[in-house]
Length: 240
Image 1: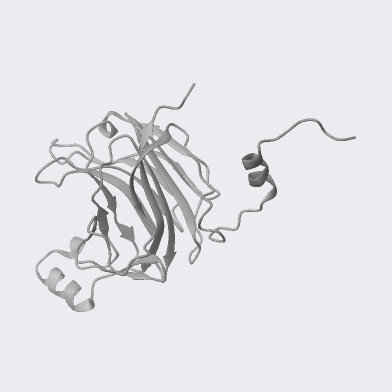
Image 2: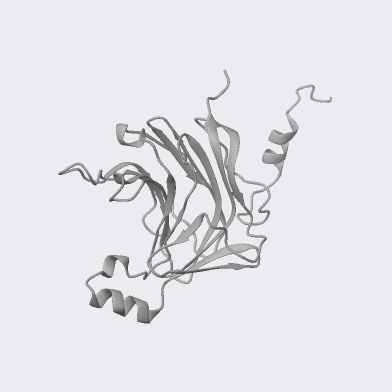
């Protein structure tokens, strides 16, 4: 007897198609939770020779487009030694670091990324200007190969005594040399994040609900990171 119950085609594809991380970069396996994509603010598939001007390398770290992906490497050993000699070890470029200068108020961010050559983790967060022009780092999602996933409220650089606070976490660890999809949503005072196959992390904090003008992309561990299929949308309310 034929089952008369129908299933939407896109759900059927999700159910019947096994997800192999990195197998098909055109089909994200993460979906929004607290918002829906509105205007597409930024997209980059790294299909050009030159890196777009919105990408800002930090601390002497080296970035290049390789086979349709953005590759981030640490700064040279010479650069690191020079910075350390100046007392600037934390910003010596020992691990890839960059910023993406795009509007980031109430947004949905989608990345495909891979940690290689000993890199331990990637941060996907937001800044309110710089420490001179704003309050610095606002909040972030951290995904690692050995310390799980976390959502964090960053300290307000203009508020004496303020500290970083872990809002929620998961023991889900990434595998090195493996492509993952990452989605990060910020709507009002809410932040939601997930990677391929992970639990969905959700948090709220008043610190999150401020103007944000850039995406902050530091890493951990001195290896190499690859990015691909980057999208940033304005987040709209979930339809009821």
